[in-house]
Image (tube, rainbow, N blue to C red):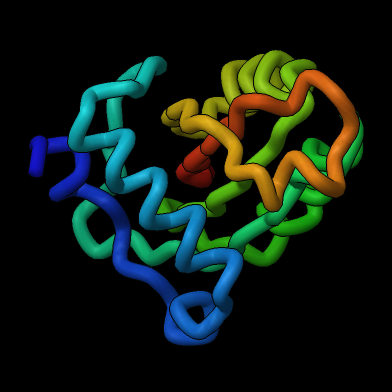
Length: 136
């Protein structure tokens, strides 16, 4: 496991029980060990907790960004939100939002499974994993 994967925040108990979350989180961990990450690197503070998971794989932009903004309202400073998306515009919009708001952001890409592609629009061959650390 790379240093990045070792520095993932702990997961809130309620999230760990969600099947979709568990599959996506495992894919993110795998991407981190393969160093398939870009951004500023994972810098989740010690003791950070992943408070929210947003499954945006079936959502068109800007819905994932709007859901992120709602989740951040109830996220403690220094804690994290994990969002998955397939719309490439979400990566750009969320990246710009995080830069403007000063939130930490790590982005990883993994191939989408056939099951994911079956109910999404075309051009969704990649799942975008975004880990946002709230800055206050």
